[in-house]
Length: 360
Image (cartoon, rainbow, N blue to C red; front, side):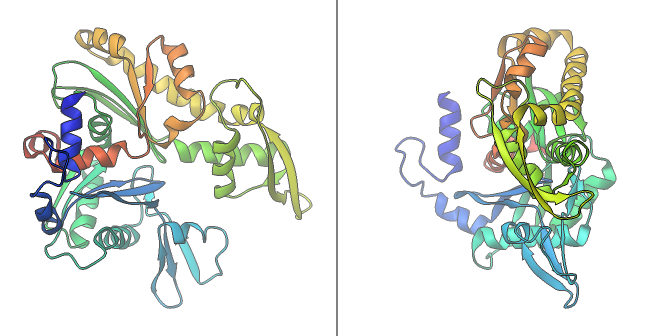
């Protein structure tokens, strides 16, 4: 896809013809344009001309005794479940929207400062990815957090649109492109044509719901209490959406429900598929419902091109194969599923005409 390659070069501050440094890229250090994928699980920050500069968990740790921020991002994630009473680790985002405004503001400010490694010469212009079905009040809250983080402009773009652009789909063409973005808090499904969303749906069942389902299963079936981090580790190490060619096993440490002492149990991939059955059923049903609502004129495009999976949930083993089997359509996983949204948002920053068509 030569056009996409050219856009990528321009995005990263390279001259499209020679591949060398674009003289205009020097100005990008003063423009301070920043794209943010404000995810429930992870926040990615893209600095124009430099690419992805931050990719860390969306967590803020507060010191309640001192009334100040103790840690943000990866450092705060390491504190989950291990903090003394005066340290409170919180997730500013829940189900794809801001749940704690103060924490969100501090997290955005921290990551923007970290992106530049210095005090920016000018107030940054932000493009932030959001779920397509959030309310006007929630959109206003996201914008307000951006302005409180000292942004000069704040523009919002629907995450499926940004993900489709980041995955290299021809969103400006008069043809249907179906994208499924499975993040931490929401699964966003959209059909895009001519730089607009023909159909969009946001389901508040995604990676976090899978982690909760695993923790619930371990408590009920194995009498073992585990934390959020352990549940996520289980999902990635032995989780799958369909039977595997070679079985997987894993040792899990936790606290026994009735005895109250540490225990270690061995689990297999079949057990975790059983644990993930309900959240996966809801996601697959949402995809089938979306296909039924696609305008007939775009159905043939989707039948030929298939669907594209992005987001962290897209990396669950065999999810693409199960989705293809249940829908009868081709299913592709984006080249960089975790960062498709922020890459797409960064490409929007570099294309003023596209920005006017897709941001709000």
